[in-house]
Figure 1 (tube, rainbow, N blue to C red):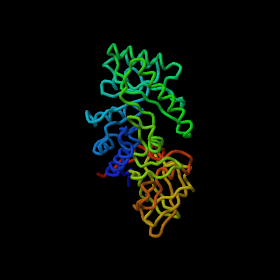
Figure 2: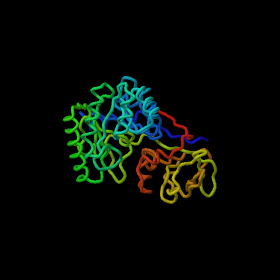
Figure 3: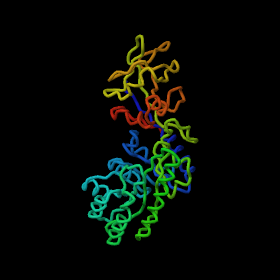
Figure 4: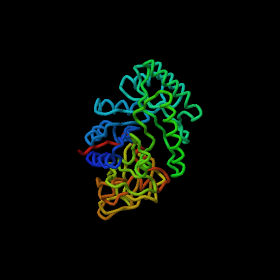
Length: 341
């Protein structure tokens, strides 16, 4: 009686279309980091391409290379983790575009040549790598030298923002605009500027530039404590089956459970008898309050789109003060991924 993560690809297509419509004319980079948030890079990329996606990106090289293998010439793929020389060579050979936010990494990538297509990162205050503003001009000048020598091509300027408050983000945006001006003054001609991720991109058009990086919203995961995102809904449901019936109903996700233990006594699940509390979480199984007529093999939905009374991933995340992506990422790779068209 295997548990399943059921992924609705048609729902993903609808989400991506809704996000792209909202962001137009800016391009949407669909984030596929960590195996598309544990939902499987290859089917996710294929469905997003159907919905018109022309950019993908992720932190890790593995997810990005897999995305490029599916997308081919239909989409560009950006990878922003600073990696080893061997990994950088593999990424460049696969046709990835690399995020470069460190002077030493710029030299490393330029030495590989190709030429490598890069996006230069300015630190606008989040301190999640990126070149500090006081070092930015020299960094751009060096990048321009490498570009003239044919070692790299600077396709973009980018950054992360904290999304802590509108005022903080306005400061970050001003720093970003200044950095772009400096880069152009040093002879660079970036075609793509990208600063915003899901929340800022959705609510503040002035942050969109030529491209935005959207992860959670494409998968129907809203921000914690945030409103629903019109036109989107969660694409995945985590479904387990009853394995024993007693005072409570025992369910199991498999050899590695992954359901957060802190949700015991806080969360509920959808059952054939309606919503029932999660009463206990053990290392390899969980227990749900029994319902009339409960039987071995009955399905229990631990999270999904809410259509059967189950919580969404963000509903669960809010109960334990985290983000909606975490319940997805905690689902063990041993749990079967099942895709519907």
